[in-house]
Length: 281
Image (cartoon, rainbow, N blue to C red):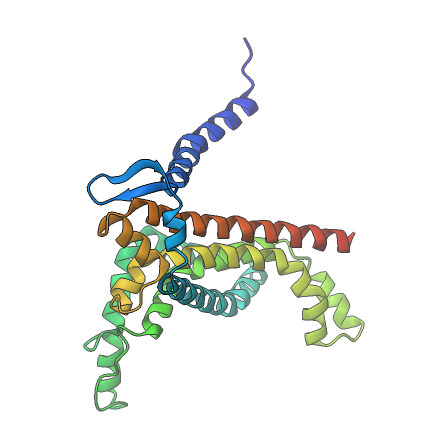
């Protein structure tokens, strides 16, 4: 009997995703419609109380704050990652591999440990303050820890590779002869970027923004370690509802909202790419 390796591989991947992704997501969705209980985490009674609780103004403020931090992180990562990916795609293959390896090295260390490393940099007695004091540039340590700046910096540090890699994957296929042709025709740098480079790299931009924005909203330990948990993000609330308040339906409902947001962003991504490809055609 001949084995169809293609169908077998696809079946294994689909089965793996169904067991380890699909079933947990369905359980999460199901729990969000149950009644909360302090003793048993939840009761098997259908209830919309978790979603009604999400309408509380306090939760809405936390959601807006999370969107603000995630959007700021995404924008900074895009500003830094776009030129980085562009110049990386232009250098020779030998040095390009070196740059990509250096970019991947942080993934060899747990993100929680890397967050603690940021604390060592920003602390009152951290590396930055010690260097500035030793150089005589400041008279007293600058307060950087437990601020919005520290939280955004930590998120950018963790999320930047997720912006660069999709951009690089897109820009690596870019035909740079188009830029040279535009210059020969008298196009300015700004016009070349606006009409050629930006439209052709838009898929990479959208992919990178999605890969940064949604995870940035859920990295609860960054806000806890660098922000001092003074301003909760949606990820902090989900963690508290599951582990501290024992309100699993509310924590599940918050998680479902993030999943729906991710699906919505992917849908917008698909529509934009469809219109983009149709416009090019």
